[in-house]
Length: 456
Image (cartoon, rainbow, N blue to C red; front, side):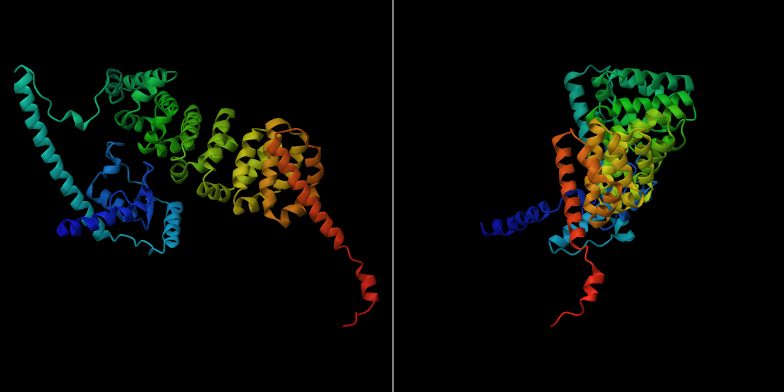
């Protein structure tokens, strides 16, 4: 009994320690806290040295094995947001910050994993082969041949997927074009088809077609992705397939119709909270901002919606401010073009200090007050909200708001939602308090000087 307690005690302690560390802080390869996390095109985060070792040795990490046939490690993007969160986590628990894994240790770790995985695969294949022979002797006629690999290794192909895959991989352009048109039609309205056809195999075949040099193939491939992404269960799967960098390339320089669909696909994928940081890290923000300025109406609408959802994440807000998004968005408000969506993005940007400063530098207070005087409905409510987040900027906002006549505009803006009315009331009160302070400080200095120095 004493021996059993001595053996079991460390095992009981270990899980309690590990449970305190969120899984997303741990490298999927090393299992340790990440010191230098990077995002790969699939959207996963790894310790930099670990993923470089995987790339060097040609190893597919288990975390990616079910998502893509051949993982893409060409672009490693620093995940500053995750790194900062991990360091804050360590500080709050008085833990030492994690140290980066050195290259030699990472290569040894990956080599050991490869050796272990190879051994397990060989043992599994041996068990499956014995099992197949036993089943064959018991239940199959001798004319039936067994599969060369275990059926558990791959998901079974359904007939629709099998036919599509054959054409998608065809060397004939006509066959590929017919397949992507068929996929687009099949997933246009059928939710069931969107779910059943969105497999790792199909996404892997579709990925190079998204950047095809043939217009019809590119357009219909990206449109098919939009349709597939409409199913909520597919959004993370599509991002992890490594297809987002290709969508970004299409948005930058693809055929015009394909670029429209790419903006729509990024908007749809951005609806999932788990995708927002990765999409921003994979370079989607600059081309979305460009589409907002130079795209047609449909692309502009989808780009604005995508930017709204992406700007719900702090790391993306900071990037958008640095990319010069504020003047573009204020220009949309002034022109009235997609003003409602532009205001929603501005509200998100105004929730961080950098965003508030950039907005006030660009004349946002005067612009928003002017828009408020002529706005109605939800656009007016969004305008009030944007002013309210700016009001957290303190004295600078009060001075700009007073110069723009914000109090009068807010008092005149009747109606609207209860929340908007409450925010307007608070801002008017705040500006009134400041006006009273200024009046109280309005001292006749000449008269005071004439009175001489008071006795002490």
